[in-house]
Length: 414
Image (cartoon, rainbow, N blue to C red):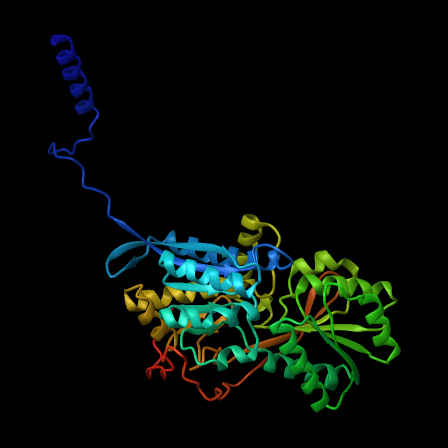
């Protein structure tokens, strides 16, 4: 076997010659181990709300990418934050399945969902697991009344948005006759019902109240609204549906001002899709005008370079949701999910969208809303409402028994 022996000896010499050695002749120090921390994302990544859901996921991905480039550490150990995207298709049953899959994968928190109906379907699942769910888009007021301490949202709820929109349209625009419709979703039903009441309290008259589906003849509905003397049409529904409605109103000769609240339409995507039909659409969204956000120009440029279109008015809130989750973990020096929930109830963080802080039921402590009008392919801010901190609704104990009052004190995170 001398030939085989010589071959192996030569191979060993060649392998040793290729080993990197330190000046002292010892092997180089091994690289510092990096621990991957999973943050889940649940939202509509397909279907009618695909563009909206993807915009939220993209923004969260962008935030974590920026953080990872800083070589972050928790408790002295290098960590890498990874966003685990899941498509819940804006379907409550699918979102529940997605929630269980994300928990099984070991996520420490979840950004999502992108709609109120899916948020309602999964809030208890995450609460039972002690995992924070922080939504950048779900706005139904009832979500924060369920008693789950792990539920948080980045935006103000529909009752306040509707009250502010009714105030502006009746008091400033002098609109007196409204038609109110919804798309039958948890969000659409709730926001339309809220606006219905708020408009009447402001002194306006609701001449028609209807519900539409994907089989509804919207053209006939618009004609009925005009015949009944409506000056404006409030729509509780999704952005993609609002585009079609705006186009039909234009094709029918105008005469109705389309209005929406918390629908995420304020952004380039709606303007591009609706084109000239977007003109004079009125919408109220959470947050101050984006042009006043510190860092907005950098965010917008980087987002467009990486992802192209799909930038909505609520997109920056997903970016801040990822940022505030990591800030809370850094404060704890840990990614422990239950400690993260406690810290989020106390945290005060300055984000792209402004101050981020939550009350006892997970709502923003001091929500801000802005009324916009679409003019010549631009969203023009008309008025900003800065809400004082609102008294929370009576806290119900969750089935998991986690309806705890947050610890006193608010550690400021930067």
